[in-house]
Image 1 (cartoon, rainbow, N blue to C red):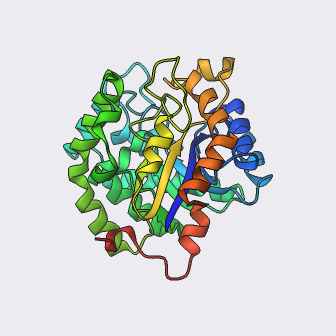
Image 2 (cartoon, rainbow, N blue to C red; image 1 turned 90 degrees about the vertical axis):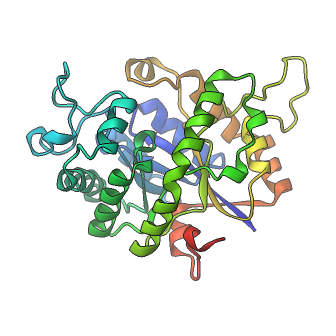
Length: 316
């Protein structure tokens, strides 16, 4: 059986993003969402989450391209060096990656900041069912180790598996798309960390899906790669990706939203694509496709609480 957790990232980013996530949950296939504790409209996101009790809410841990929840002087090694905004994290993922790979972050400070973000959401009265990171920062072992420690401290049972399984990646889908081809190469390279991820998660006794999809296609889920005159059918990149899923439990990462003035005022490359994803995630075509493919939508809460659910790391 193939199960799919559809998780909307960036809850709390803008009111339009909050509204779109709620709409794609109530009228679409989104089953889970991750909330940014440092998001500009955090309280609005909490209200939205409370109005949808079946929406599984996790913490979208921000360690890059944002600001800490902790007092800046207590997490100084996590902040950008020689930045015009000294109280913020690195805005560049490449700079963050270099620091993380070289062990430049204080491990206790990482755990303290991640814990503070989780606790802020829990203090608002929401159950934090799972964790992931902004820009998939926990692909790096140092960040993931801190995420695991914080999960244990806060009692969170599930964490996103940020690795796209190689057997589910079909290079031909991305040819002719330089932006996606570059991301495809990055994903293949980062996959070298996947074995260590599986080993650590197994030792910690934390639930994680078999892998993630939608990472390479972020911002292009509705694109078919066909000429405008061709019939689309189930030709979107999303459907092409889901059709090739092996047996197991997988997570689809998505970013629905409204491209309004608030969204254009924040630092994000995903603008029109959020509108496209909102439409796709609420479409009758996608629902029909999932039925035809016999893919069952579940939430992170259901995944972590299912008796006898196997860990992804135990699969061959």
